[in-house]
Length: 279
Image (tube, rainbow, N blue to C red; front, side, top):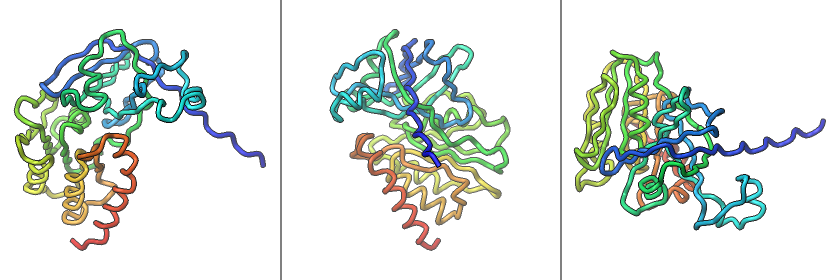
């Protein structure tokens, strides 16, 4: 029998910056649009994400943009660098894709780019990915995360039907980082201040008086914090794995390249440790 040909990598989307907006001192919004989004769709998951492609070290790539050609003609260190961001909103009618970026001054790659990018500039990205949307058959919902998970939590709250029982905890640096979310769920904003990342979030979820019934939970943020919450939910509360969307979006001391390279092993090790731990 003849071998099936390998699947050809999908060509990245190409879009233009339509407008930008500073939402809070540390959150910046970039809206993308253009004809390059004609075949794009992000309307099945509330945690949809895209992987933005940034030129490595100021490299200039030939047009038309072709990842296969880049991999063939450029050394590995000059391939585009990817950064992952949640789809905050997708407007199919106007073909506009909204992404929100956490800004920490000049730190990182995507944050400084988002803070300075101008309308008309071209952006390329892959996606969308995603796997979560609130389960309508659950008795109640739990959302917990830090700034990195804020866009996905906000989107999830906005698609929840009115009247659904849900608890949402979002840890941010201070009150100036709170955002308006179009939902009847009352968000508990946790102000970190000088405390370690995730400490206030872990305490708040642990202190919650869990309602009766099956919960569907979305818990994402800094990896060490998520590790503690995973233990609380999987081991102590005995929530089934299939009722949890839980993982570290980032890890202190690691950029995205380093974290993504080790994330699979980290998650597998933590899962194995906690499965072996009695409640």
